[in-house]
Length: 236
Ligand SMILES: [Zn+2]
Ligand SMILES: [Zn+2]
Image (cartoon, rainbow, N blue to C red; front, side, top):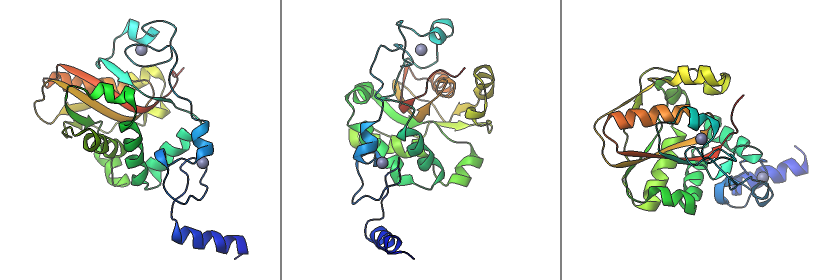
């Protein structure tokens, strides 16, 4: 082992934390799990946006929402999906980094636009994974984010939904196929009431959140607000 390798492995033993974006060694876990250099290049989702789905849009409603409103009332995603967020989400899902999901929850809890959605919510809930994916991964990253938010904001966390069939990974599909894929993918586990805050990690087309919100409405929710870390641009 080289000197550098030896130093690195002893540092790892002392400070077993790496930036979730660039994998550089860190002395302590930073907000969002990202080092200052990665944090600096994050793209906040702050410009003119669709009032319903938070997609960057010059109009009050984006083309999708104007043509076919989503089942959720509002969505907030404080960041655009890209740069270090891609690596962060990948590690959170596929590298057994449950700690990153908790870090995302902590960071979202401090975001004022996210906090505003939680005001008046009866409960915080998460988009569930299918049994197979939950079994393979060992945890649901969205549920960890949601539980952290509930703890920070002193709101009840509830499991309200289950997937009724394993859907194909949304990232492999085009827009029309995504809609078909998630339709009727969720059912509520029991009745709900009032406003529910529904949490997911990343929003792509918004169809998954919409299908989950639809199931919550069917179970009695009067409003469904949705919250995610990041928003992907509209898929072609
Ligand atoms: Zn970094
Ligand atoms: Zn929209």
